[in-house]
Amino acid sequence: MPFQKIDAEKLSHSVVRQIEELVLRGILRPGERLPSERELSERLGVSRPSLREAVAELQDRGLLTTRAGAGIYVADVLGSAFSPALIRLFATYDEAVIDYISFRRELEGNAAARAAQSGTETDLKVIDAIFQKMEVAHSKRNPSDEAGLDAQFHMAIIEASHNVIMLHMMRSMFDLLQEGVFYNRSVMFKQRDTRDILLAHHRAINSGIQTRDPDAARAAIHEHLNFVEDALDLQHKIARNEEIAKLRYAHEQGG
Image 1: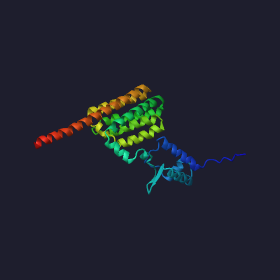
Image 2: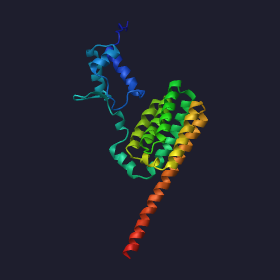
Image 3: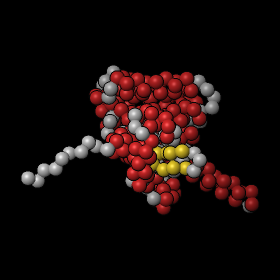
Image 4: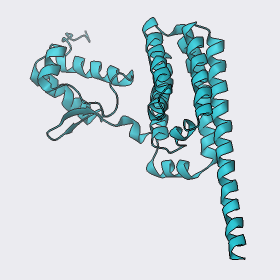
């Protein structure tokens, strides 16, 4: 008979599967440092040899990396989403900004609707907690904290959609946004009137999700990103006009 005795799964395999799922679900993030070997083995309830075997396997798979004298880290698995050459093109191609916002509008609209419909109570608490921090940061003169919380707020909505493909794609996209590849988000928060409008947008998004109204949540995302697109387009026009004005002024001075 073609049957063989089934062996209990090796402990190291169980560790591998648990860490893989934490990375997949976005709970363990790229660049995040894992606890020390001793602490991690205690938390997982496995021996250090079993843990070392699991870590070695995860390193071979490219999910973990070690840094001499610093410990074990989640590998920068998002870094391969776009090649450096393509990132440079994004940064120099004006229409990439519009394409990026269009991409976000569709995906985030769906994510907000999913979060409103099927996000857990804890998911909604996380989103609301970040929004409350945004309100506090809004009162400060320096907009950097508010701009940073803006990205966290949108990522919390993506996480609450519980779509792992969308999660990792959007996390990669937000990493590029934070690096200023598509546009400098902090520029959007420089003007007080603009900051007030953006906060009102985020309040509407949060309200739609907290009241579990998927249509309202999606509509609020669309309104927000339409505004961002129009504001960036205006900024680009003003910048181009200023370049022309400087040329005209230089010509008048020289003439």
